[in-house]
Amino acid sequence: MLQRIYFFLPTISIITGIWVLLSTYIALFLAFCIPRRNITEWTVSNKSRVFWLLCVPWCCFYASLLEEMIFRAPLVILFVRPSLGFWGVAVILNLLFSLCHWFLYKNPLQFCLTLLWGPIASFVGVVYQSLWLPILIHAAYNLIILVLAVLILRKHTVQDIYKHLTGQRIISDSLRM
Image 1 (cartoon, rainbow, N blue to C red):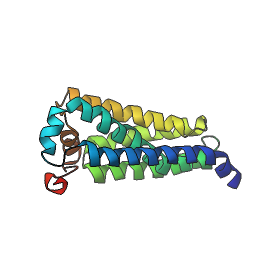
Image 2 (image 1 turned 120 degrees about the vertical axis):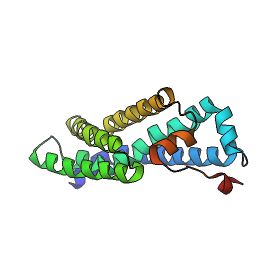
Image 3 (image 1 turned 90 degrees about the vertical axis):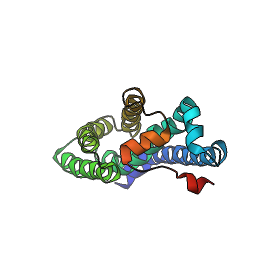
């Protein structure tokens, strides 16, 4: 078991480093690139900038890296190939993954979609013994959802998309002043 952890340690280190860099980028973007007053007006007048410079990195890469490290990495490290034990652990981790999305978004569609694609990402990760493939699947899925939110729902700002998905605001104007 320890040998498997050592085998994946370089990948885990790289993923963690990328996550830290993205965290720093997002914090700096929020602190210095968005004006302290009239955040809503600024995001509406800079829709594409906010979408590509904040929303895509945050939702596609930041969330994907973090969630896959928590919910897929244990499967890839523990199992060399899919087996009966793999499917038992995969079902439990994917149920936890879906429940986290349920409690975060309170959206039955989001719960069902994560419940459906979670086992696929787990299977691909174990079959190919890669943490990168589930991360790429997750990032692609999130990017498709973001683009659909913009195109179909006509939600254009990070605030609009986040509020539509969660019912909450990312940043209140009163906190930014």
